[in-house]
Length: 280
Ligand SMILES: [Zn+2]
Image (cartoon, rainbow, N blue to C red; front, side):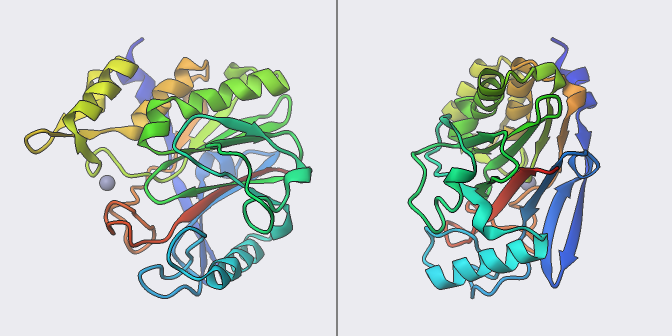
């Protein structure tokens, strides 16, 4: 496969909207796609104090549950969505995918969490899929033919374990989705200029995805890894054409004004959500 031409076909672009101070990012391609609604939260418009200021949506940080639940209500109101329909991922940095429907509404937020999983799929318009992020990639999938969706949290471990590819394959299995008809969008994540890891990890990525340019030299013993490209390669390997893939093209690490970054803030940070639902 000619990788250079593959990456050229991936579309880029995002739009930031603000409703009552709540910032929501959207992929330009997915925003003009009929049959779905999606978004990615920012730090803007919530009530959490520093270092979580202000729209922290993680219940596992040292921020009060009351603040976080209030942020969820503020965010979903701004998005014009019913918080009662949200189903939260329960990520473990793996590649397990769970099929959900409206019977799972509230799990991870008001009800018991789902089993460990890094991806969610559904064909039920009543369920709103939600994943959590603070540098980790976010992969949105839509099958317009069978009207099914998938959403995944892709940290470096999940990316290495091909969670986005598993997401596409789960949709093929559960909903007879054809990868060549699917559309994919990637949310913000830590970029190739900012994500420095032990060199061995970068080498593992190169050998797993057979692409030398996933790695860039760093300090002695270190290297930079391109997570977004690894996600694009695995979506293509699942059978999704590169021209059906788009990226918001934003780096969490570089945008402290807009986004939380676990790496930049040394763990003392909040988290954003990605969400995706089918619309009538
Ligand atoms: Zn960056």
